[in-house]
Image (cartoon, rainbow, N blue to C red):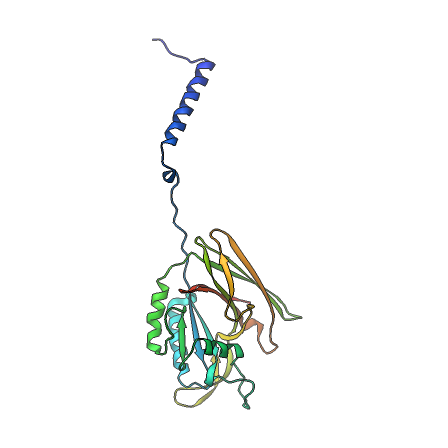
Length: 269
């Protein structure tokens, strides 16, 4: 039996011929067939509940209880903010022992959204304002089922001496998002008076996720574009009011567009 053993020249020739064959084969593949499409990575879509409330609103505790039930069911995916505003909010200009939880910014939101009654709730700013507390769960279930590719992250840097807070928001997405970025400060565990459904005043009512301040340049949000596969970074600075307890404060950041809230996060200080 004769065994063929190619010499160096023959071996180089065969490798060259094989390379030509492979290149020719590749050139016959369509331009759109050379890459495997990888769909954008989806992430958990959190739900923002804006609760337009007031300490002198006897029906508002019922709304608060409904929101608590949704928080118990869906956990951290529900991010609620209690915005004390409108005719039932208590303010510092009123002669009363109540700690004022109403804000001028909250009143601006109240007017901007043309709120007709309280309590009023917006769920991810999807559709119209909700005045019936029995409709909260349906709206939340609709939003929970939605998906998004937008990721948000908040980094807080706080100086105790000056009470200065720097907040950095990082946003990235697989699909370009253009909208408005809003960054709020909210405070939990505020024990203060609240009128109850039976008309009584509960002096030891615990108010949670109370809107304190917007720290964006525009209280209705700053324009932002998050390009696909790139990180958009925005930093804001503010000084905490002396009456706010730093350990109870959190940052709520969200991006919305004309379809509603694209993504929202909450981060403790």
